[in-house]
Length: 154
Image (cartoon, rainbow, N blue to C red; front, side):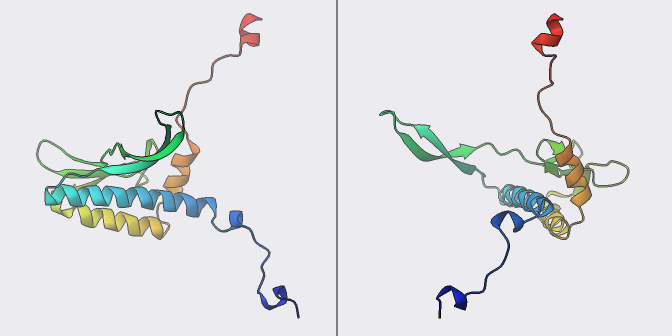
């Protein structure tokens, strides 16, 4: 008997493991969990710093992997009256959370921020924001294309 005959095989690949929708949900949940950690630090009065791994050239000209601080931009803020808001973002775009096009959630008090972010994470995992994510992913912010040189000289 062959060794491979005892294994269960499937006709699938790594690319089939997650659909683009599931990948977008996972990306948004990851960013929301980072916002959650930032909000928890804000409420407890501590500072919050995220890091990332980059490859750079050292003094000898060799590549090295180092951990560096990453800029953290909070998706929450308060107005002059002290009311807190949360804006859920996918990349550079704020997600439209209602049919009217509203992009911000009224949190109220700062202490409710962690609970609201947790609720948004549950909504993303349940697929309630899929349409808004697809819309934001479909409209990419980038450089404006200019006329090519051949058409400009003609």
